[in-house]
Image (cartoon, rainbow, N blue to C red):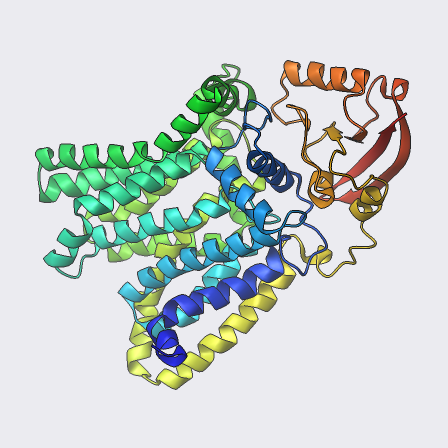
Amino acid sequence: MNLKELSKKHFETLWCFITSLFVLTFTTRSSFLFPYNNWDDANSYFTMGKGLMNGMVIYRDLYDQKGPFLYLLYGIGYLISHKSFFGIYIFEIIAGTIFLAFAFKLIKRHSSTSVALVLIPLVAAGVYSSRSFYWGGAAEEFCLPMLAYTIYIIDIFMHPKDAKEYDRISDSKTYLIVGILTGITALVKYTMMGFFFGFAVISICFIIYRKGFVEVLRKALIYILGIVLPFIPWLMYFAITGGLDDWYRCYIYNNLFFYSNITADSISLYEKIYKLAKLQYWLILDNFEYFVWIIVCFILALIFEIKAAKKIAYLFMYASTFFVIFYGGGTLPYYSIPLTVFALPGAAYVADIFQKAYIKYNKRALWCNTAGLVIALSAVFAKYNCLSADYLLQSRQDHWLTRMASHIEKAPDTTLLNVGCLDVGLYTITGIVPTCEYFQTNGIALPTMFEEQSRYIKEGLTEYVIAGEREPDGIYEKYELIDSVSFYDNSYDQVYYLYKLK
């Protein structure tokens, strides 16, 4: 098969890849157009992945509270590029391509290839330049392909072309696949489980309607089997390394009882619902780029769908997703990334309307040329609309991280401690592998973490210390200040201090 035949056969995937590449290159700080991805969360994941690839046991030897599959992905990214986010940039492009590929399939089901070509860049620009997307590299971002596949399956459940298509897509294999995707997502960040709860409830309704209760039980067992499968390699890994208890303590227990307010009794249910409704209002205002598609989805579903269950299916899945993500009290912008997947059925409903115009003015060349223009305009919109717009094409040499790194000795055994803040990125650009369990000050605010970091400083366990917000108590007993920087970024003042062991 020559290149022309290959590109023709995989044209839709190629279009999604081009769209993903164009849009993400201007919006994620992992891109080569940015000096660094200096998002502390992403650097924390990178350092955990680096530790994993250097023989350290995550959760036992290094503390952070995201899921192991995220650290594995970042670890592979580290193997691609030890001191940059180039590997993560590649994975973001791949994840974006898969996400958009299922969006393309979904839109095409309701319209045509030509209409999908035009709408895909608009959806991509809305999702990847929104405030929710943040700076690029979030755990939720890498789960979008799995959510998009599931939404695509739900759409076929709701709008099968014929009985054969429904039977084909609702077989055991599909439930096994969605189960596996559920398990993987749970091992990236389990706050997204509300989405799959919504899927399960809707699936049960459709199965009961078509096949009865016995079939529900059979599909449920297959789905649960799929969920369990991704856990097996990690159970083996942590069992062999003696880290099972640490995995549970860090990823489950501490997240529930220290990181979130899910167990708090200080406010009433009414107050909680009021706060969630207020949060939803601000999410719409802050992320109108993709919420316009979601709102359209809910409105057109009420208008176009005949059966009551289909009218509210997406709304129910959205509510389940939203509730589980935000009930614990966290409101960081990137938490809402999973909600962006509901823009896809909205685009599909719009595509249904566009298709009528396409039939009336059936000029394929016109639509293809329009698609080319739309992808260009979408990239321009994404460039200027994203949160990182002011950071684009800044000089790496003028960045404070470059200056800080220049003070650090370039040796394989150089050690570093990050205190008072999440990983600022110095581990990444210097290539240093952390040697302390609490290598950063995590947002989970464990008393043990503060005690241990104070001990590290008191005993001078690392050659360098970088501190954020304020100078650590007792730091000058063992260390001397060699550099400091203060600047305004991300809506607040930041200050960092770099120390060297005397």
